[in-house]
Image 1 (cartoon, one colour):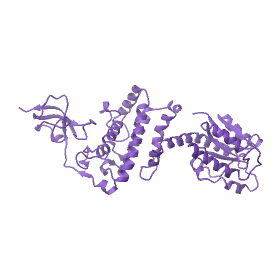
Image 2 (spheres, helix red, strand yellow):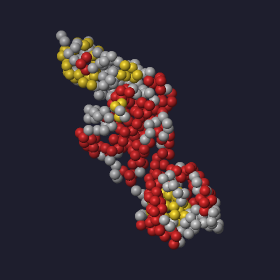
Image 3 (tube, helix red, strand yellow):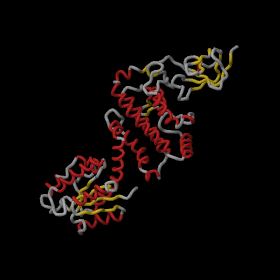
Image 4 (cartoon, one colour):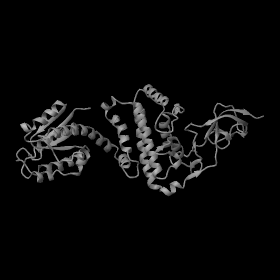
Length: 415
């Protein structure tokens, strides 16, 4: 974590009353930058705004060096701080540290009431922290540590404002924002990459995809069969949104060739669930939790890559998908989405084994038999050949499984 610098405005900051606060901060690595009036402190704040993590204010202080202690100090300063936040796109969390012994103290403190304070100090029920209360000083120290993290979160939310506005809306599944923030913080702050765990962040990508799928379900874009209690079947959800027949249920979205996800987004999500196209048979877990064997594989996979860019790339692509999904949801109502759920005649691997089929060729040059079985590319066959498939499996190739549910690996050729 970077050095935590705190701007401190108090015309009595060198007094005995402030000794406990000064000692607590200095002994715990927090650098206090003291000023005795706001105007001077504000100039420093503006010039060093990227270095300041928090501001501590006395309740009854000077607005400028020629001023006397001003009862409207808090009202004016808090208003200016909020203006600086808007101007520079940086959060400046402020706290009030006071002796609480001035005349008309309650009236003065009314000026400190601000909705913005909820963002960093909502768990502190009192309006100010007392200079004379050790527990108060301890709590203030703890909250200053917390806002050093909050400031980074605020910056990331500003950079991806369009995405987080969507994630925080009523349309999106709750908890989505916090998962995405955990992924994006190490991307923007190199000092947080020291403890970067590729497996942990890969699992967060899967969790985020799960949140997206729950959002789809709430909008009528997924059938009930894609869920087991509160758990989302990631593969069934992915297949349905991609326009594929479901593996365990005879359901699909609309007619052949129709899908919710555009192909480019379908491939991105599919690759996240697979880890990568090249290793498409490595991850078979249908839910967020991975098996021990899969966990070992994922860890080894990212160790071989050696960087975190792979994961960050997928996180940024998911941001695009969030924006697309929000637009799609606004343009398609729940009732029409549910109407696209199509129940199919049961089709399974057994429909292809030991039965004869004429080999056909599609517009992309792929050889296939029946309606849903593509033929393995290395098979030496021609269009018009008659075959009897022997080994048939589920087709996991992201480029063809939208159209062909199964793949034939071996066959007998009819004479």
